[in-house]
Length: 366
Ligand code: IPM
Ligand code: MN
Image (cartoon, rainbow, N blue to C red; front, side):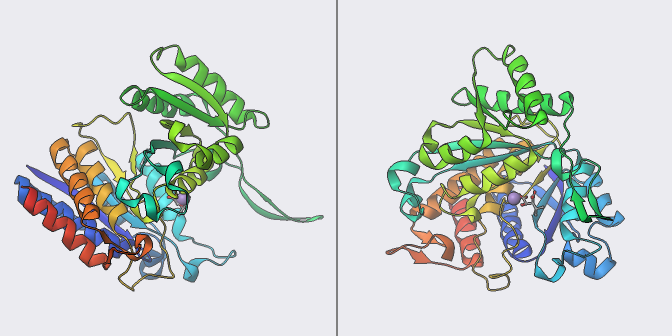
């Protein structure tokens, strides 16, 4: 089959890790007889430097004309001044909004090979397999009013958290559907003891639960969730949270898996079903890591596993997705590690070498 993929590496380590994701995609193409037509575009800081804006009409055109988007990361110290007029992150936020990808799915699976690499104790992280479903196109990230203004009492800054019932329902539904296909446990995260938005979130989640009698729904306050995630993460199956809470909790959860560099994500405009074909945005959950950018040591696994999600959920290629995940598993089993997860007795490899190994595992498997 033939597919069109937009590739947006962005800033910092974004392009390096995305390159390895692309190599793995091409290896899958060779192994399974598919053609992937790649269109590259700018986003974020590099786009500001080249075109004066973090998301050009040309790149928006790529979002519309491709089967899926593979994205790296945006941002960096160069564009970070609090007074900057244009920010790289706006490119990412506008892209998410443009694509309508309200459900950001972030699986956190602890590989048995990496239990010793985690900063947490092995008995806490062993066997952890959870998914964070983060609301991605609403809440504090988008609602108006927002901004900064001078007042007689000094400068005031404001952000707004706002959710409609509909926005809550569609993302909590993704949580229920995912839970239904897994261990049937959904933790709905909120701060209902303080926030109006959270009280509505809880009402909507409770109402939806009636449609999913087979799924056990638990409401968890976000602060308690943050604690339990490192205390007894094994108890979690699917977690669904609003945008900002989900952003924070998924970074925290990544530490269970030893490194942020390992985790992929899929951003979709509906319930994910293996084998389905619908546009989506795929990105590792990590950022641009300016401190290691260009050194060739970043972990490309997050991007590679994002490609696995992409072929499964946007291209309808279930077997191919499994082949990528198996290849990553095998490479970790060969004791090959990038700098972020290297431990005594394992072999440290570069970003490109990690890509080489995964590509080789796919070639051997086919
Ligand atoms: C993420 C990132 C982004 C976010 C930033 C770069 C705007 O942290 O994808 O989690 O907050 O959504
Ligand atoms: Mn984040």
